[in-house]
Image 1: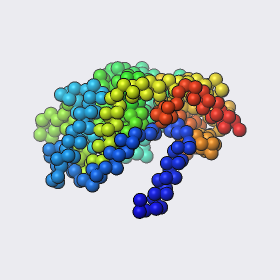
Image 2: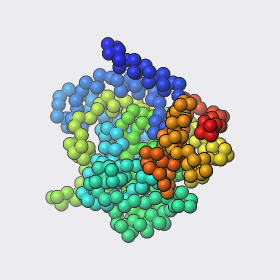
Image 3: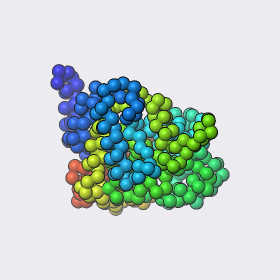
Image 4: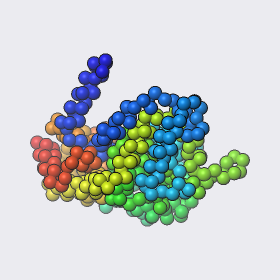
Length: 399
């Protein structure tokens, strides 16, 4: 590499990743094949538009890559291409969610999403996000005592507020989501049901976590978390769900979302990124990936249980996924999330500080940390490693 400064930083990052334990719930390690596709000559090609309808010539192979990526996305989640469409051009999870709202929710309309401190994402209508500036958030959260979703309370709120869209799927909620109940809630108030499965998409693909597709109208996901792909996103939508156009003709959700992505939000797609997504989707369709997804959840349960035995409060009492939320402050230990994450990083364990339900502190220095087992499971970690890791975390934080 001619640029020695950047080359040195790349090598330094490689060393950092190799020498540290990553428990960031939204990170993973991609394969050499994914990296090769991401750094391919497709980086050089501008491909504004969609397959068969591009604005520039020279698209014979970009079209094939994008079509293959779509086919693999639908196949991985066992979706009928007659009933479902998928957009593979969204650059990441936040613009994917924004595109859905632009396509399906009128400006100023209501989006009902989980509040940030209870585990929701910024793009589920939080006021600092564009989704909270263009639309009105109807926030819901978890039960104060159980720290899990109370579907009856959510239903009452939905019927009273009548949101245009309800969002299920979260960034810091460790339990399984009952998508059937959310479908019933959406039907009760006439709302569109969107599931953001960014965190658990790989677990769904690996048949270790329930699929939302039998109940959702739209499903968004990033690719770089449990799906173990590049930083990118997918938007799945029901073709048989429609909205009326200004001319009075019904238009499918898939068509509206495609238009919202391009030309609504983005210009030309990153074809190297789409090629890498296609590779990751193929890898996720293997028996080895199913085994991996199940191991991710086994590891998370053991890590959660061991930390609990050592006296740490685990939000909701445990986990049903890859994700664990730990109260480091209000359970008597008195360590803020910021302090805890800094202490752990000094000892080679990477986590992120995180708000917890009924948070009393600032998001910049909250009461908890979030842990995830997807990355370390990719590196081969098993249950015995999680027991040792819990003991190490406990020792570091109690110094």
